[in-house]
Image 1: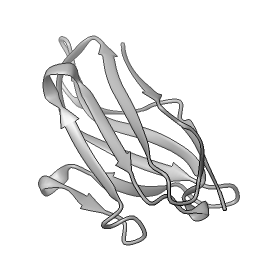
Image 2: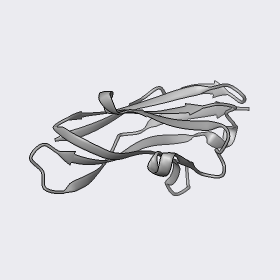
Image 3: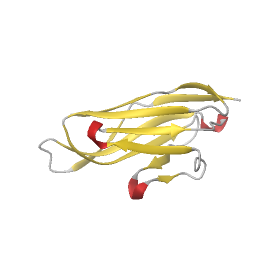
Image 4: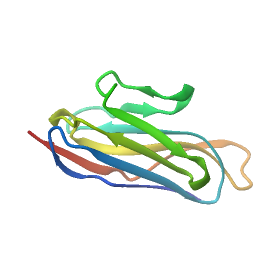
Length: 119
């Protein structure tokens, strides 16, 4: 079994910063990609940042958010600067993982962490 656990969410005012973390644990053999998604109330889940190709971002967060990864710790981070009220959402970690003894890569999701930005 593989688990993803996000942390670091909370309440911030517009213009402030916040860093999210996501750690993969359990029977992890290898991780190919770790991404961040978010879902605001009444909206579809959207890709915020991925470390595919060295880092790609949704247009709405470019220049403000930075994704980074510590492969040794099976952890991905999302540094969020200059937060805006429209960044309010539940943020989810997603990873493509090869489990111990597994033959196929599988996609896993964390349980999400709430980020609320007040104006």
